Length: 554
Image (tube, rainbow, N blue to C red; front, side, top):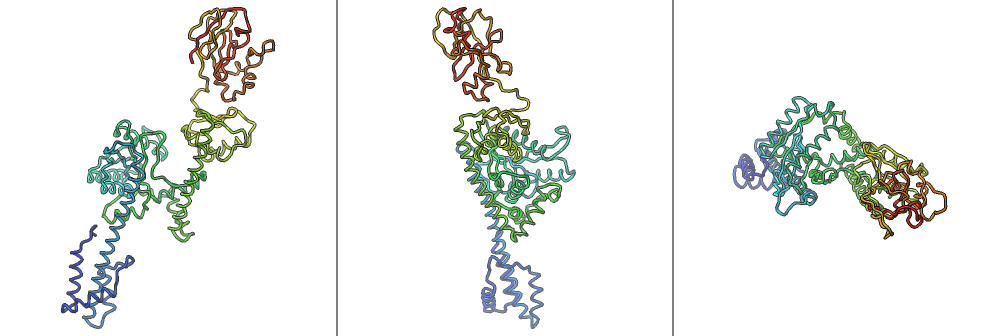
């Protein structure tokens, strides 16, 4: 069927039908008036082929040839007009499909790309050869947005034999026809001994990022477009329900997302407002072929079972597929609104805590918003906790409030550690946190003390020190004796008791700079950006020995 309305062709068909059954102009006029009165066209008109109409007329009109010819005229004209009506409906639906893609690109995607006025943006489109990706590629070519420079990328995983080869050759042919640059990448066994969907997904992601880096000018952003559509978004929502998810993440896909691991990339899903049926109608109405992946019908993959079994069952129970889609959309919208409000309150808590390296726990029982603040803080550190992992952390905080030092493994090579009133994240290969210490630059003997400061320290030492140094606070140093000047005449106290008395939070104690003598004695401890000297080295408390000035560097 032609993709455009052809009035000349329709007129010839109608004229032929009128002449065939009319012996004069007056009869032709009467036939046409009767047709218009009898068969008004509506969007719901049923389409009949000429063959069906002819069979109907021979069965219904057997009285004489004149009656048969009259009905034949009606049938031909009705069929022709209905064909034109259907073609017009097809065109309107195609236009709506293209308009939804253009709307997503103009309103949602392109504003996220910070390019110079008049410059083009690189868009990499993942093309498998299926109807989804082919429709996106064809739509982008038909829209021809001047802001976009489209590149296609195809991944051959070599998992389906000649079918994989056929997909690659088909995509190459399509891109050649459309004159779109194509980048093809092959999965090789040397990359990984065993193939899995997770490994393949990671591989594809890295390849697309590397390709984007090579195409996009430095300092600019590029777009990675996938052909996910509305049905995919619904399936994602159902999969989240099945595996467990927080209520503020109970939503489908977003049209645009910004990856944390690639600041110059914008992920776009321009087809998210279209259904699978819209996509296939667009291709069929333009006689555009596509490839079918047999694995999409396999029950091996959970997403396929959701698509082929669960969603049809739910639609059958509800009694209306459109009603199911509407309810899930409402649920997704409410979850997004809730998420925005929760993130706003959680960010406020993080800002008030005043710490980026640590998550500061509240004095009371952790609240819902504070839990969300903790989860948001973990994401900002590059750690995405699953629902179950995050529940384990929250259970540890709620069920064991008196346990102020513990470590939990949360996957991806990370540990989440509580130390007093703070929580921090540590990679398995990362050394324990030390402090930003102070190193000795120079020392010299002085006659009179001038002033105390953070960078210059005056000490009274019995023997001139060959060296002084700082050291991370180990358990041994914490138990070392220390006597501040105001405890002159009293027994020394352990360093940990001194820090506790100074109300230094537990998670900050390992970061406290300490200066030790060559013999390992504590000389000075830094608290609140000032140095506290041990009484044995305090110039005002001790008049014996040498007055030494230490110049330190953080």
